[in-house]
Each structure stands twice: as C-alpha cells, then as structure tokens.
Image (tube, rainbow, N blue to C red):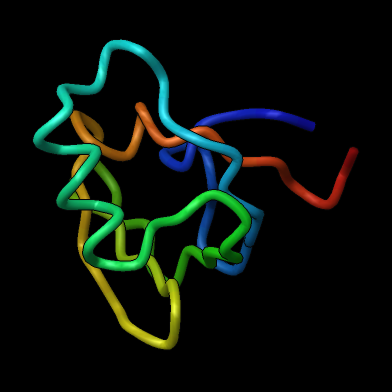
Length: 80
C-alpha cells in the first residue's frame, strides 16, 4: 500500500519509493544526504500526539521530522 511517511504510526515501517512533486528540491537533496533514499527501509519509532514531530529510523540513524516534510516522502508499507 502506498502512502506518506507521516501516516506511519509508532512501530510501523515501510520502504521509501520517492518524493512527491510538491517537495522543494533543496529539501529533497538534504533528505537524500541524510539517508532517505528510494529503496531504504524506514521505521516510525515515536508518534507523539497533537501533531508533534515524529521520530523515524533510516539507515541506522534516528531523525525527527514534522508533517511539513514527512508528508512529502512516499513510502510503500508491507500491507500491499
């Protein structure tokens, strides 16, 4: 099932399929520098309430992303 990274709940994981067209190129480049490459597995470690930034693990590194960025990262979950 294809969705955005922001839709993951704590304990969920998926594989990055790419970025949507609304994400600015400078964000896209920086995310790839940090390890958010298509094909990488990403896991949601924490999903606090009230829209607070979520905590994700990718490439054995932990990052906190807010919805303004994570919503533009496309993933495929194992439910598909």
